[in-house]
Length: 84
Ligand SMILES: [Zn+2]
Ligand SMILES: [Zn+2]
Image (cartoon, rainbow, N blue to C red; front, top):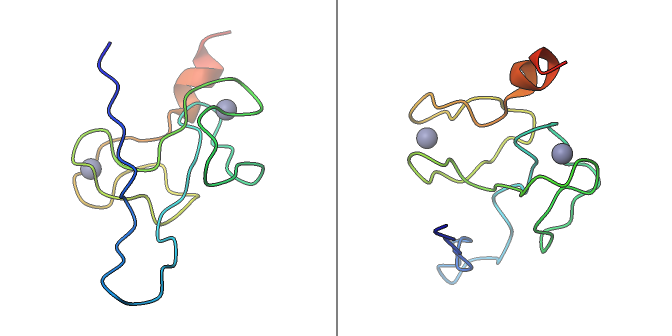
């Protein structure tokens, strides 16, 4: 399995080093209990994402279900429901 770690995801161009992306769970959509340094979802154990898996755009909206740049689905809530 290829593990892509991108630690320098925040753009600090001498400006304020503010985090401009969210860590969120692609399975259950959880983000409110997740800290920036977390790796796995505390609710379902899924590995968190903070950027689009397709085009690597940072996820700036924690409630977004699709990537705003390429349209890739980043949170698959419907699939979660259909499993049962
Ligand atoms: Zn989750
Ligand atoms: Zn994308």
